[in-house]
Amino acid sequence: MDAMVLEQARHPLVLKKLEVPKPGPGQVLIRVIACGICRTDLHVIDGELTQPKLPLIPVHEIIGRIAALGNSVADPQLDELVGVPWLGYTCGQCKYCKAGKENLCENALFTGYTVDGDYAEYTVADVRFCFKLDEKYAAASSTPLLCAGLIGYRSYRMIEPLAKNVGFYGFGAAAHILVQLAVAQGKKIFAFTRDGDQQAQDFALRMGACWAGGSSDSAPEILDAAIIFAPAGALIPKALKDVDKGGQVICGGIHMSDVPSFSYDLLWGERMVKSVANLTRSDGIEFFELLKNMKIDVETELFDLREANQALEKFRSGQISGAAVLVMS
Ligand SMILES: [Zn+2]
Ligand SMILES: [Zn+2]
Image (cartoon, rainbow, N blue to C red; front, side):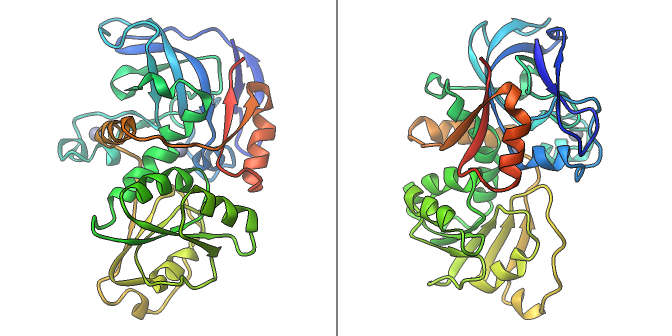
């Protein structure tokens, strides 16, 4: 099978012919339909996440169909549609797993980082961490739901349920999915993009934001909560400035540039800053259950597997609105 392989961080991926992997006990072999690119993949490929398995098949937003079952797998059935997320394995034994916080598991493995991901025609995955998907998601455009959507959803769950005015800082794959869910639940979304990025602001308005502006603009109304999707630490004090007393600033990214120092006044009034790490399986089950009754439009730009490096470069330079997805031919 063809696969795009990372041999060394900060180097382009290399096209390789590899054996189709065999599913071990508890694993399934998946024929990949498509895989989405997430900012975390850039952090892995660019060496900002420093512990990848090498060589590595990156990427962790996959949808595909079951092609073979390993020993002791009874469900799903052959040909069923599944999604594979970032969380690839947790131990079930550590204090975090026992406390229901498997997203913090000390022995977790992550798809496309510490286990192989999906830049390939086939992949194997631990069946306990795959999500069975409704057939309506059998399209390349559904792949961003598996991470941008899911981690975005975990971030969104962290804000007070009664928060009405919510700021989204950075408007890409995660934000454009979440804005639709949030608006359906009666929230008003204020989208902050790079200053002067009219295209991203138009995109945010089109997807349902009630206001869009640059990240140094002031919001036209005081915000109850903020979610930061962009990896820019300077957005934390900015978002604190925009939120009301008691408001939360949730950071949805796995990596962020340094946070500049700021006056305690900005945090005062029981404002809170919190990061979101990974996901739990129950986040996914809840998210995909919600999506069954909704129609989420995902904007994607499609690339062939062999165009992986071009797709990554376009994504890195901020030229993709929505999400970049690689499709298997
Ligand atoms: Zn654990
Ligand atoms: Zn991701």
